[in-house]
Length: 327
Image (cartoon, rainbow, N blue to C red; front, side, top):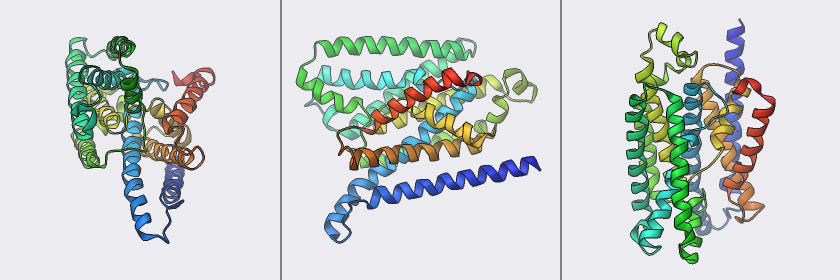
C-alpha cells in the first residue's frame, strides 16, 4: 500500500510540474506578443519558438546527464561539469577567435561552430571517458581527477590567450562563452534533438539498470549487471549529452546540480525513470522562468545563466552544510 501511495504521490507531483511548465511556456510565448498585429506576432513567435525549444533541449539533456552521473558516482553534490566539458567548450571558442579572429567562418557561421564543438568534444569524450576509463581499471575517481586536470589545463591556456588577445575580439568572444538564449541558432535544433534521441536509444538498456547500479558496485554485480561496461557506456552518454547541450546553448553551470537534487528531494524515490522526468521538468521551469525574468524585468541586461549560477552556488552551499547525506 505504501508503494502504491508513493507512486500516486510522484505521479501527482510530476503532473503539477508539467502543469507549471505549460503555464511558463504560455506566459513566455504570449506576454507582449501583440496578437492584434499578425505580422509582428508572427515575427515574435519566430524568435521565441527556437529559444523555447533550445531551453527544453538543455533542460532535458543536463537534468538527465546530472542524475545519471550522480548515481554513477553515488554523490549528490557533483555535476558533469567536473568532467571538463564546459572548459573544453570555452577553450575551443577562445582558440578559434585567437587563431582565426572574429572574421573567420568558425566565428560567423553558427552551424559550422556547432559542428566543430560537437565533433571535438565528442573526440575528447571518446578518448578520455571511454579509452582512459578502461585504462584506469574503470575507476570513476580517476576520471573525475582527469576531468579536473583537463579543466585546469584548458583554463590556463585560455587565460594566456585572453591576456594577449585584441580587446575588441575578446569583447565579441564573451558573448559565446556565456549561455545566451536570446540569439539561439534555430538551424541546429533538429540535429540536437536527433543526437539526444540516438544517445538515449543506444543507452536505453543501461538506463533501465540505473536503479540497481545506484545500490553500489558489489550489489549490482551480484544482481547480474555487467557493471564496468555499463558504467563506461553511461559515462560516455553523460558526456555526449553535456556536449550537445553546451554546443547548443553554451555552458550553464549549476543547472544540473539544482534540478537533479530538487528532483530527488521532491519525488523521494529511487526510480530513475521518475527522477529524470522530474529533473527535466524542473529544468524547463528554471530556464523558462529565468528567461521571463531576464526578458521582462531586466530587459535582457542580465542573462539567464547569471540567475542559475547564483542560485546554484547558494544551493550547493546549502547541500554541503545542511544535507550531510548528499555526499
